Length: 259
Image (tube, rainbow, N blue to C red):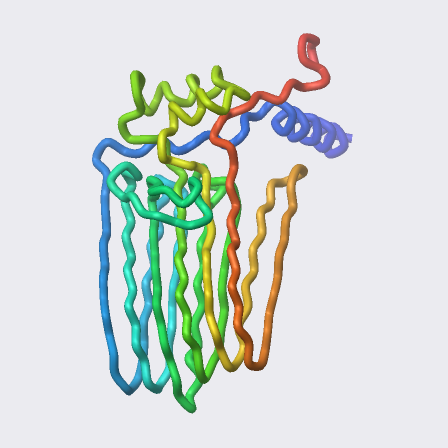
């Protein structure tokens, strides 16, 4: 009997949480913010072993990028990461009408590879729900003997570091008051599109290449997109998840009574 009562109470609690919770607000950037930058141009023949990972619980970021092979390689790559998105401004074609945007992570890779040993790689970008993100994931996988690729990855989850006429901590309430007034929201957020996660890619390859993307919120949302190709292909693709940064209260059906 106690088990049945506990199950009923737990179910009521979960339903109440789902009904009265807020939509995911942008993350407030820390005062003592951190940055990481890497630029490299490499050309040659031989063994390739490249790996970059960036995990930051303060801004709900989880990023991995790995690649290994043995062949001819030309690589022009940039990694830029900043907890203060105001300090990292880049142009992404599918974001902010192609104007410069404030981002927490920007990665661009221009790559040419040819070899009898396949170049094997994977990329994973996650706005981790547990740390305050929106729970969206984008990943790429490939094993190719030939590839030409131009790819951009982007991520932002934070409020502006110095929003106009307010503070990052008070901005969440100001966004809530703005509600459906998109002009007011735009003036508060400026060039910061939080929450945003995605990739843009153009590539030609011989081998296997594919992408997976998903956005899941328990009892509420489940979006999945999967593609995998083996052979000789040309691909041009954009994968992007974006959530309006305005928090929203969902009223419970039993609001106003003792439930």
